[in-house]
Amino acid sequence: MSVIGNTALGFSEEQAMLLDVAREFCRDRSPMAAVRAQLETEHGFDREIWEEMVALGWAGIALPESCGGSGLGVAALVPVAEAMGRAMLGTPLISSSLAAQLLLRAGGAGPMDDILAAIAGGAIATVALLDGADWGATHTGCTLGPGGELQGVKHYVPDAAVAGLFVVLVEDGGAPALALVRAEQLAPGAIAANTLIDQTKRSASVDFSGVRVSEEQLLRGAAVVSGVHDLHLLGALLIAAEATGSAASCLDTTVEYLKTRKQFGRLIGSYQALKHPAVDILCAVDSSRSFIYHAATLAGDGPLDRDAEIACRMAKAQATETLLFAGDRAVQFHGGMGFTYECDAQLYIRRAQWSQQQWGDAQHHRKRLAAMLLGPVG
Image (cartoon, rainbow, N blue to C red):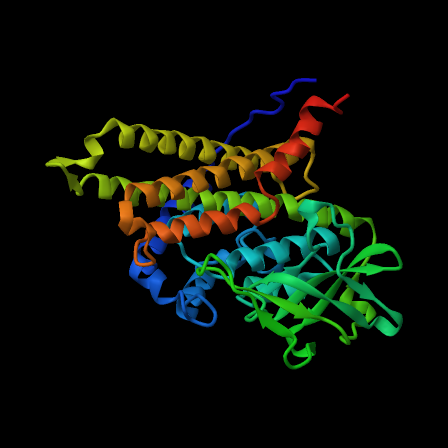
């Protein structure tokens, strides 16, 4: 068995057009001043911008045409996520898209048409998943009891404060199931906002205890297991795409500073000690971009195979470590100013810390890649 595996890399005309449109939109609607203006707000994003994104069709870009989507497949989300990352634009697009993908894969397009159509139309959804998966946790944190009553709390549920629908992974008689919980079913005070290092993002702990769900609100069976497996990989891929865009923007910000700041009568960008790491970041960003579009090439609308899993894990490990390195160098290269909250380098290193922990960090994915590519040790 080859260690290299599938090396297919495709970049379609649709993806190229989406990347151009998304970059222009995000650049115009999310300059750094606008990003900073949202840092202290309750929801972390501008509703008007979100509605414009929905009008562009991005909320349903990966969904079938039968439920109001564009039918472009999950690969079409990658250039949009990259452009959003480059502009540090925080919206519920990734959360809603992942919730839609889980419903599509676990429930099927036909039975889920009404819900998926609502998501494609801008209704915000999110997924409440397993806690502590990186550290081997196997309990879902939420159980389905007699009469369809849920018990348990989910932590760090993305965009929980604005979501109208929660797709909740629950334990049902020892087997995984998905409960579809509407926001109005939650008890008052059930949502407690988290304090995140990345202030462009929002999440909350959600107490689902006491919520009753009907049979129509439950998904069970092998499709749920397969769907949750794919969700972890697609989540890793979209965060990798976002991190790749953020790393590219971080590099641009750093290089601009290197070209204007003088020390000892010379532009600091002329010093090799600063030029070489900047080149390292550039190479790493290009590598990250190759990884995410390789994964996008292999990630289809059906269950993800071994090659797609390898590609998604590689993309996540590479992209988030690239952003971590870029953010660290940005702070250092800005000198004392880089350690201040007012310096934009802070936004990138905070995004890097957050991105690392979403859908598994680099160590988490490389541990699994080692087993997949090299086989059992010993």
